[in-house]
Amino acid sequence: MASMQTQPSAARYPAGALAFPHRDLIGIGQLQRHEILFLLDEAEQWVVLNRQTNKREDLLGGLTIINAFFENSTRTLLSFEIAGKRLGADVVNMHAAQSSVKKGETLIDTAITLNAMRADAIVIRHGSSGATQLIADKVDCPVLNAGDGQHEHPTQALLDALALRHSLQERGEKATDFTGLKIVICGDIKHSRVARSNLLCLQALGATVRLCAPPALMPDGIEAMGAEVFHDFDRALQGADVVMMLRLQSERMNGQFIPSEREYHHLYGLTRKRFENAAADALVMHPGPMNRGVEIDSEVADMIDRSIITRQVEMGVAIRMAALDVLTRRTRGVDGWENAR
Ligand code: NCD
Image (tube, rainbow, N blue to C red; front, side):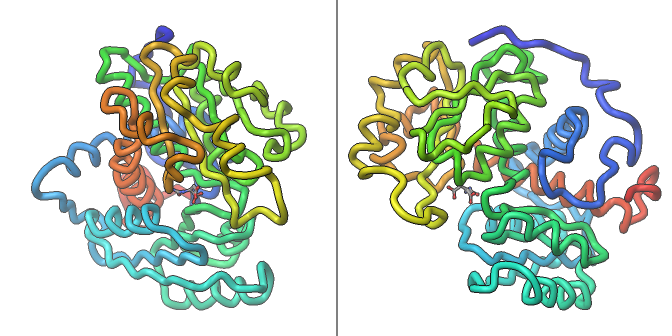
């Protein structure tokens, strides 16, 4: 593993609301490096709480959080629900079937309805890129993006960073950021909001990001975002410190992007043999849901000392608790946060 840069944790971000001067959490693209670090550091207290028997802290008592999910989800919805409840909020889940009207009137009407119910925070997942921002523009409370189309999934990138930081620190590295790390993201980059958010987040924290996909699943011009682009997975893996695998997002594909799952696995599946190309102690990540035997083999996904996939899920709750806490500080009149946007 490459050596890590260490920094004192004090003075990494401004005091009070200046540490996070945003009303909403729409994407990593809107965040400064120190704002990302602030959310990660805020989440640490919730990692500790979540490991205790009593996991309740009544910070958000009396507040209503609406999880409006227009797209299927298991772990993200559950994670946001648990996060809100652990902080004492009333959490309501709205599962709306994906509408055939992708944008416009329907979504705006929904936003107006949610607003009229006086939610204190709204968490949105939607199949259209930009849908979360559209809703945020219409409501009075903070909005959190739980994944919008192919655009962004900011809490996923934050939880991935936190999981990685914990795993590196457990190995004795004083990892406050990821300077010097080579991180491969392999899979359906084109349709993945996770890839986009992670590229932005990992780069902001100093990592070198290598994106790997078949040409048809690599977005045009992605090099402009500073990533190294590979189509040969074995080459991308050379000396990599971390390998993040992604699912084929079939539901977003119009037509045929790969010859077959078998062929895809042959070229881009993470097998134990192929994983040997990476650094000897490389870590493996996956946001889930996994398609075992397609993009990743069970032999790798379940490696006890190398796979941090379940840790990613654990950190998801802590990150979402941090985001809900920080974004509602103004409403709750927390000292120093009165001027938050
Ligand atoms: C991801 C998503 O929904 O974008 N899953 C998740 O949030 N854990 C990735 C995926 O669906 O493949």
